[in-house]
Length: 193
Ligand SMILES: [Fe+2]
Ligand SMILES: [Fe+2]
Image (tube, rainbow, N blue to C red; front, side, top):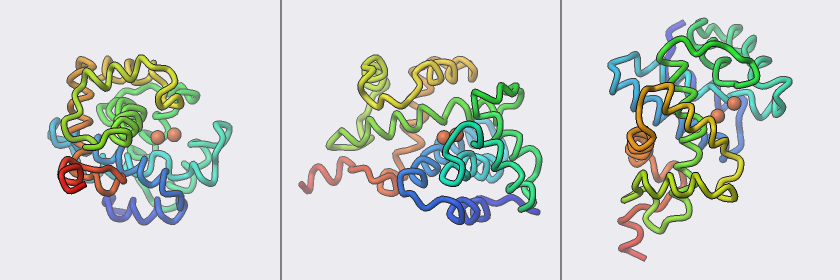
């Protein structure tokens, strides 16, 4: 089958109804898609992979099922091994090698996209004007977005060979165009308010 972003969206929305999970998928997609463009990679495949990385979370909400029990579903739907392998590799507990750029980028964007999203939610201008240094400051406050694994955020930047500042700036820039889909305000809203 030909992997397309739209096909992946269709699969995702078949299994996932929660708005929070759909927004998480969109955020990770935007971040991973940004890196695909930056690195000159297959953006359609990378976006589809990012959209599907947690596609089974609603039906498999525990780590003894997610994401490993989702893989056979993706296989039956005809998704290629490269996509399925990458989806599996995002899970720390499966301890799979992150031996491709796609696997590295997916891992590096998963937690950080959620964290940047959370930063945007508490700012009147959303992601507009959000600087890496204020994201880093919030990373050091354990109570803020407490579910985000800080060690995975730091490990992700290192895996990409980027400074944390660069990685944060890239993710913020990738998420800005979809602020509305993520339920975030923008500088324009703040002016109107
Ligand atoms: Fe996951
Ligand atoms: Fe995720």
